[in-house]
Every structure is written in C-alpha cells, then in structure tokens.
Amino acid sequence: MYTCTQLLQALESGACDEALSVLYAPDGGDLEAARSRAIRVTSALLKTFSPPEDCPAGLFSGPGRTEIGGNHTDHQHGRVLCASVDMDMLACAVPNGTRKIRVQSEGYPFLEVDLDDLALKPEEANSSAALVRGVAARLVQKGFSVEGFDAIVTSNVLSGSGVSSSAAYEILVGNILNHFYCADSQDPIELAKIGQYAENVYFGKPCGLMDQMGASIGGAVAIDFKDPANPVVTRADYDFAQSGHALCIIDTGSCHADLTGDYADITAEMKAVANCFDAEVLREVPEAEFRASIPHLRQVCGDRAVLRAMHFYEDDRRAVQEAEALKRGDFQAFLDLVNASGLSSSLHLQNTWSPVSPRQQAIPLALALGRELLGNSGAIRVHGGGFAGTIQAFVPFEMLDAFKSGMESVLGENKCHVLRIRPQGGWVVVA
Image (cartoon, rainbow, N blue to C red; front, side, top):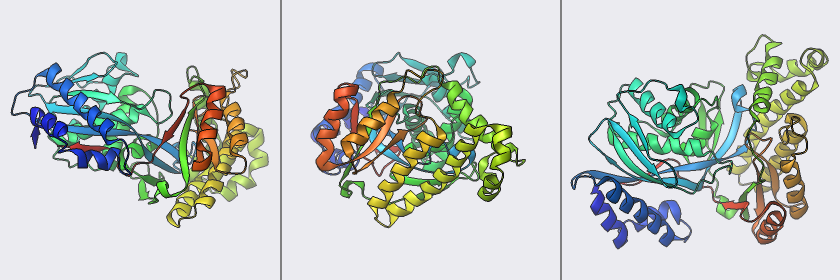
C-alpha cells in the first residue's frame, strides 16, 4: 500500500506503468499521457489536502458507458446490451480521518459532504453532492461504517457525450468508499445498485440500472432486468479491437434541456399498454397477447403507444441476439442487428426528435449524414435516451478518417469521438 508521497514517486519512476497500461494503453496506446494524468491528480492531492505522511492513497477509475442494444427496454424490465468505454473519471483519494468527504474535481467548485448528515436534501437535486451523499447513505444503510476521504478528480467523460457521466461518478465514489471502508466487499453489481439508488433517490433522476451496470462491470455485458432487484448479468466477451470497426459517439450539438416530458411519455405510454393487461410493465405481457389486441389498444392508448410497445418487444429480443452474435464472433450479424435497432428507434419508438420542437432534428440529420458516409458498411443508431444528444456508429477502420471529417464538416469540430470498449469497469487502478 502506498502513501500519497510514495504513490507520486512510484508514478514518476514508472513503477506503476504496468497497472496504468492495463487500463489505459492495452494495445500500445498513450501510456505517457496516462502516467501524466495520474501524476497530475496525485500531485494536486498532496498540494490541496496535505495528507499525513502515513496515510494510504489510491488511484480509482469510474468509466463512462455506451448503450449498444435495448433502447428504452430496461424500464420495462427488459434486456439490454451495454459496455464500459475508455472515457473515465480518474481520482487520487486518501482517507482523511474525519466525518467529511471532500472532493475537488478539475473545473468544478469544491465539494464537501458531512457524513453525520446523510438525509435527503431536495436542494441538492441534480448535483454531484447528491450523488456522493446518496452513495454514502446507501452503504451506511447496508451496515458499513463509512468515514471521510479527500479526492482530486479529473475527467475526460465529455458532458453531453451520452456516456453517462453521472454513472461514472457514482461508480468512482462507490469504489473509493468500498476500498477504504468496506474491504472491497461490494462487487460490481452491488456497486451499480448503490449508484442507481443515489441517482434515483438523492439526485432525482428515475433512471434504470443500465447506466450503472455498464460503468461498473466492464466490457460488453448483457443484462436481463426481469427482476430489477436481482438482474441477471452475462459477459458478452468479444474483442472489439479485432472487429475491424471503430466505435464512434457523435455529438449532434442538440440539447437535452426541456425534454423531460418526452422521456416520460415513452415510459407512460408503454405502461399504459401494459395496464390494459393488468400488468405494470410490458415484460409481464406475452407478445402474442399484445399483438392480438392491437386493434383495441389503438383505440384505448393511441397508435404511438402501440408502436412504442412494438419497439419494446423487438428491441428486447434484438439485445439478446446481439449478445449471441458477439459470443459466436459473427460481427456482421451484430452490425445488422444494431442497424435494425436504430431503424426501430426512429420509426416505432420515435425518440430521434421532439414533437414539441420540430425544427430541431439534429439526430435524424446526423443519422442521415452518417448513413450516406457509411453506405452499406458499418452500423448507426440513436444513442441513449434520444430526442437530442448523441448517435452511435460502428465504422470500418478504413473509412474512419473520411467518416469523422464528413460528420464534423456539418456538426462541428471535435463532435465525433472515437472510443474503445474497455474490459474493466469501476477499477482500483493502484493502491
């Protein structure tokens, strides 16, 4: 175990290069940049908090995630395919011997949470403090004696990139507390549930569990939410580096603000269909019964609700098929399913633009442009919640430069982010 000073010396000498390479440079990537980043947060912690010489220190990582399959299926207790990516939040942290968690994130105000007051605070909704307080509160509810820590955090999880910065932050904080005060007893699934609790109850966002699972577990994972309290998680082991394709997340430049009603309508309309069968979610309704009742459902719930329910059944099935295609190494079948999912999201789920603001159709425009650039190659789809924000594409390596420049010629510079699916989720990098 390193003290903070020893950790800095080890980083500067290259003694931690192997640990950093596993996470940040597995294929001969930019190890020097990873080392420099780790040195920066460790040096900043020493300067900002001046921890005691004998205080143990560690480096921790919380990655972003990408949704691959199962668009808006998780809240209906359906199935998804998601993965952690190489955008992450990196922290150097030390126990501070107090009852306060103190965090300085680069570019953000100083944050302090008093562990003697873990009550829900409505005024903290939608804030980092709410996530920290919520993660700590849940661990205390589970019987752990949580104490304070100091941390410096740096992040390359771009805001609005659709890779869930809130889940990355929850998993980062959860791993720090788990390592220092829970003897690493909470596995990635439990840490994901803790993060979801913090986001639902303290942050105020009624998200499903996919974001936290994708960030916490690592690699591509298939998740079945039939029992949300006990989701079934299966690794879809596949070496994406050998696929011949790059994963791109493209920021369309559109804003999620004022779209809460659009997101809520999807859940409400799917639930309305389920309620017609005395069920709460569509997973409880046999698809054959749903399809036999479509004439009646059109009258009771409306055509859009029926179409959205159709999307649920189809994309729920596709998420499983995508995982199976990866497991057997059939990447073309996987790409075909990703394209089919994207088409269903556009035509059935209808979450690529908001009827409240029809002039803003950045996602359909970006999808159309991307399909023109890809031709009959690769795959492209809406990414995440939709209506605004990002799209996802799998682009053949030989087409990547032309695809990136073509997308950015319309959407703007640095809007197309080339990511890597990383095998590790939330991670104790060095301790």
